[in-house]
Amino acid sequence: MKVIDLTHPLQPGMPVYPEDTPPRFPRPCTYETYGFSVTALDMGVHTGTHMDAPYHMLQEGPTIDWFQAEYFVGKAMVVDLTEAGQLITPEHLSSLTKTNDLDFVLLRTGWDRHWGNDQYYRDWPELSVLAARFLTGLDLRGVGMDSPSPDPLETHDYEAHMALFRAGMVCIENLTNLELLPREPFTFSCLPLPIRGSDGSPCRAVAMLGI
Image 1 (spheres, rainbow, N blue to C red):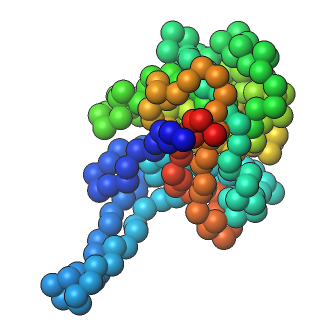
Image 2 (cartoon, helix red, strand yellow; image 1 turned 90 degrees about the horizontal axis):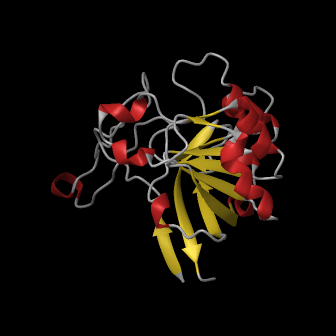
C-alpha cells in the first residue's frame, strides 16, 4: 500500500484565512525545566488542512463530532481543474458522471502552489452555485480542495458552502499534493479530531493506493 500525504504541516507563522488568529504552539513544559516536553495548541479549528462541518454555517447542522469515524474514510476521485480558470462550472465536473459510488471528490486547481505567500488568500478558484449543486447530486460525503474555500473571499452569502452543507456534506480545505494522485478512484481518509460541538477541525488527509 502506498500512502500519499495531502496535508500541509501545522507550524507557527503559517498562512491563515484573513482575520483568523495566527497559530501558536508554546511549550509550557520543556526538557530543561521539567525533564520532558509538552506542546500546547493555540489556533482556530479552520487552520491549515482542515474540515468544515455543516454547523460552520448552519445553526442546526451537525457538528464535527456528530459523524462516526468511518464516515471520513471512503472511495474518492480527483478532478483536474488546473485549466478551468477562476470559476468552476458543472461542465468542468462532467467526468464525474462516469464513476459510481464515490464518497469524496477532490478538486485539483493547483492553487496550493501559492501556499506560504500572500497570493494564496486572494482570487482563488471558486465553485459556481450550479457546480456546488451538481456535486450535491452525486450522493457524496464530502468535497475537498487545494484552495482556501469553495466561495470567494468577498462573499457574504457563502452559496457554495451552503449548498454542500444543506446536503449534509463536509468540506475539506487547504489540501496539497493532489497532482500525485491517480486518475482512477482511490481510498481517501480525512479524519478530524472529534471536538465536542465544533464547527470544524484540523485533519490529516491522505490517499491510500493499492488496497
